[in-house]
Structure formats: C-alpha cells, structure tokens
Image (cartoon, rainbow over all chains, first blue to last red; front, side, top):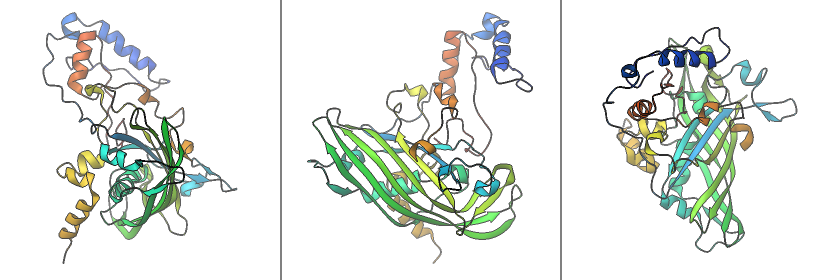
Length: 301
Length: 54
C-alpha cells in the first residue's frame, strides 16, 4: 500500500513464500508517479498505544498445549496428542501483563538474605493467575477466567543469591483455577453441554533484581499444569479435554525488553483483557478484588 | 519447560520486524522514505492478531 492509501497487490497463491509477491508490489510502486507515491501531506494524528507504567515491568506470556511421549516426556503435540486435534495457533499464543513500580518493588526484600521467603502480594498473585494464565491458544478470546476462579493458590519468592550487584530470587507456587463453561458445536453454536474449565498448575521461575539499576532485569517463569474444559481446535470446532484425560498446558513468562525503549509509534498494544475486557473498568485490571466485588453485586439473588 | 513453551526459532519470526503500530505514523514514515507499506492484519475476533493477544 502506498502512503496515500492505494493498494498494491502481489500474488501469493502458487508461490513459495512472500518474496515474489513483495517484489511485485515493489515493481508496481516503482511505476507510480512521484505524486501517487508521496502525497504532499498525510492527514490524521498519530495515536500511539498507551505506555506501560513508569518504573514498572511488562511481562510477555506465551502459552501452548503440550503432548507427552510414551516415556512421559513433555513435547509439542504430535500424533494422537490432544486427541489428534490441533489448536488454531500451532505455535502458541502471546500475551502480556503489566506490573506497576510498586508491585515490582514489593517483590524485593529491603534487606535481602539468602533463604528468605516472602509471599507475593495477593493482588499481584491474582493478577498473574487470572490475567496471565489465560490459555489464549485454547480459548481464542471467547472465554476467560471469572473473578472467583481462583479456588486455591500460593505464590512465594525465595532469595537464592545476594551480591552487591543483584538479588536472585526463586518464584514458586501453585494455583487451581476453575470456571463454568459450555460446549457448543462450531460454527453454528448449538449447545452440547455444560462443563467446567479447570487448570491445576505449578509455577516455577527466576527473578533477578539489579541493585545498581534498581529494577528487575530478569523474570523467567514456567507454568505447567493439567487443563480440562473446552478448547478450540480450529476448523474442527470446540473440543473437550476431560478430567480423566486432561491436556498438559504450559505458559512461559519473560520480560518484554522492548516495552520501555520502543518509540511511541512502535509500542505494543495492551493485552486483550486490559484493552478490551476492562476498557471501561481499568481499576479491575489492577485489582482483581474490585472486579470480584463488582461481579458479586451483579449475581442474581 | 520454559524453553519448550517459548517460541522456537522457526516460530513468530515476523516479530523480528519492528512494526509500526499506528497507521498514521506508518503512512507518514512511508511518505518520508518514499517506500510502500506492508500492512499486516488478520481476520478473527482478536486471536489472530499478528502481535498476539498482546
């Protein structure tokens, strides 16, 4: 497309990759007049994505279902894993979670000592569980955990190493999430049955706090657990992972290194929960208990 | 487990491009550089977003 909005097309069908199609576009562009290529002015205002909180942190979260080999080794699904079906996003999905400066600071003891263990604040733990452990690969934004989905959970940080430069901590815990769901046919959405979406998982990772930079510079965390409930198998529609044969589901959390360095016009959009689900209710994103209180008020008496 | 869940070298390769996420900014840049734009967008209810569910 030109900066003036003229669509330049290149044929992809029957080609091996995008390169030939992009060359067609470039060739078509080169044939345009200067006036057609470069309008005198481009109308409109730049409206960059919102910046993450000052002094905070952006975690990138990947999720994907897993399979298991005959020896029990976890692997990317193959063969009859996942009942022989595959998700609509075979490479997994990608999401994010914003943390405030205060949430980051609260993770690090003022006087850290090896072996020290402290609880992650209840609010941050719930944000990680409810907003971070959304199996986007399985739910394709049609499902989410409910405000009361945390049935059990703990999340701690334990200091492992302390030096003048850094504090290395282990982040570890577990969670049980459940929510009611319904299985429908696809794409005509005929009701099949009610079921429960359930994720029973352990969390394990490493957080490094750089004392000279006064910021968290590493947050590598893996989450693994059994998922049962509904999941979307692309054109094969919605499927059910049963409690008797749950699906192994993994998440990987890491720091988005670019979140605070990209120029505004290249910023990554906020998560679906943050930008859409809580579009008019920003406070719920930062405090799941407020979301829960509001939800309770809305329940039928 | 962390490495198994993270994207493999052959996955999410389009994220190696530093995309402009504002269309007006992209048009202004294209006009300035005298280059066409590649608009990467997909259908779907958000789950097909090229940058992920962000």
